[in-house]
Image (tube, rainbow, N blue to C red; front, side):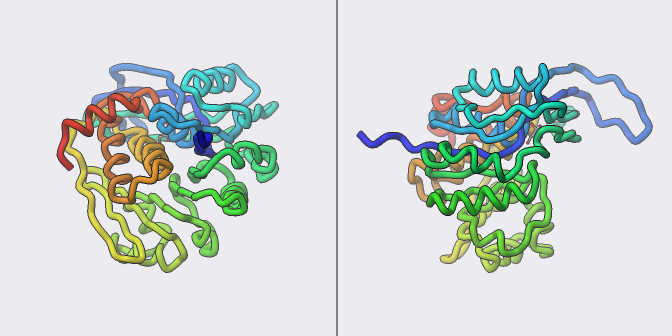
Length: 305
Ligand code: RIB
């Protein structure tokens, strides 16, 4: 039997400090929230856990501080069956943290203090060679240094990995970077920011011109738009009552990587990913609310896309 191929996730690892509140405070205002929770998060770790909960072998490549929170974050990844061989501890730096507020509509505000995320350097990618060798897909986001993103993506291509890039939080990377990207998954704002365009079709087309093979623009309640050399198609969203939208993009990207690994075509893969994101949105917490395989399969059976 062929060994199962894995997913390598290079990215951030955070502890999220979340206050659920009726509404967001105005600048200078103090309000009382409804509930507080401390939960593991970070776009990288969330996407790794999303893929692991859907049944895949996942390697996390990232950094935590040499502190109490860092230990909790590694333990949590292990409990979620994510391989942490290449999660490195960084002395004298705090682990990445995020302060999150979630209002009664399920919308959020997030402020990140990256700490150890900013110490994830190209040499760490070299140290993680073993993960890359066992993987078929690299999944990466933008919460780590730009030089590391560029290096990891080039390295992944040397190992013939498929590269899925979730450009969040959005930053400018050199145009030449995009030729290494098999699937780019910006939301509307990120697509506009990267391309300078003002409508999604133009933005998607520009990303293709920049060298991306397939562009998947996530549109929240409006679904997703897929563009590739043969044209474009819109995939409608699954309607749910939002409780907390934090981590919806992470659920989407983790599930998309799983579907691509399972060789689903892009339309099926985006439907699978959209269902994972819809399920996530019905639950509080970025990572805590990520669905497990059985839950997602049941959900998919009960909806019509
Ligand atoms: O995408 C949600 C994540 O963004 C949170 O878990 C937070 O840590 C930030 O990285």
